[in-house]
Image (cartoon, rainbow, N blue to C red; front, side, top):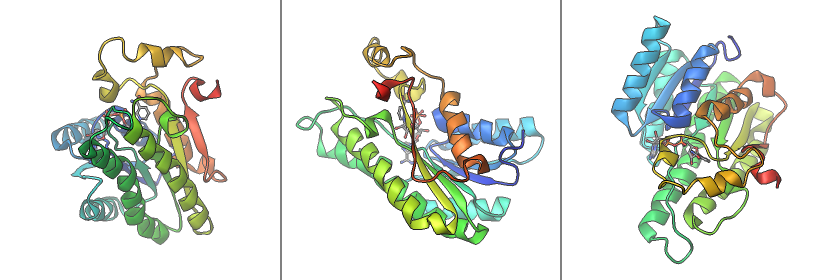
Length: 250
Ligand SMILES: NC(=O)c1ccc[n+]([C@@H]2O[C@H](COP(=O)([O-])OP(=O)(O)OC[C@H]3O[C@@H](n4cnc5c(N)ncnc54)[C@H](O)[C@@H]3O)[C@@H](O)[C@H]2O)c1
């Protein structure tokens, strides 16, 4: 019940999918949470529902476009003003666009790189001074199995998620002595609105490539994020954790 007691967490892209699952799990383990998303109504509805169930204000929803440094400043300020500080950042916001090297448009390339890659950097840049004021913190960056291995059809997505993996390690090295841990998570196929839009039958071949031969629920990633966010992972930094039913073990 209290694995995150006394901690304040900021979750980007927390209005739905994995980010929303993490918000629920974090609150359940005693954290105060700020969810930031471009889906304002959904983020607010999630926060209202969780606060109502808790009977007290344990979560706030704010507008956060992860590509905007100003939005990040506002998000960190909200954590400090509403809940007294910032201990945990989950860089979860992301988009997926298909297309190989030749058929990816410049527009799609820029959108994916800006949100998935630049957004993670901007998030860390904004959060780290606040974590320093707390004497440490934990950052969990959501990459993908597609940040570990290649496939034929998602050039921009692979580029962005591969960059998140190494940005994570470089930040881990830079901030280790300041007690700010930085790790990446690499989900396989997770059942969220992101995968809901894949045309019927499109996911099955990918699912079948994993030894477990199934997709996962968002909470199955959420528990791994929670572990890395918590003090239970006190000696873990710069690590990459695949949550993929064995996909990348083959
Ligand atoms: N679902 C999967 O199979 C899968 C697999 C591997 C990795 N991932 C990664 O997991 C993370 C969460 O994805 P999900 O599966 O929950 O999908 P999702 O689409 O349900 O959630 C992504 C969230 O990010 C938000 N977002 C998009 N652009 C944003 C922006 N500019 N600023 C702020 N928020 C923004 C969306 O509004 C949404 O709420 C993403 O980084 C995704 O790339 C997903």
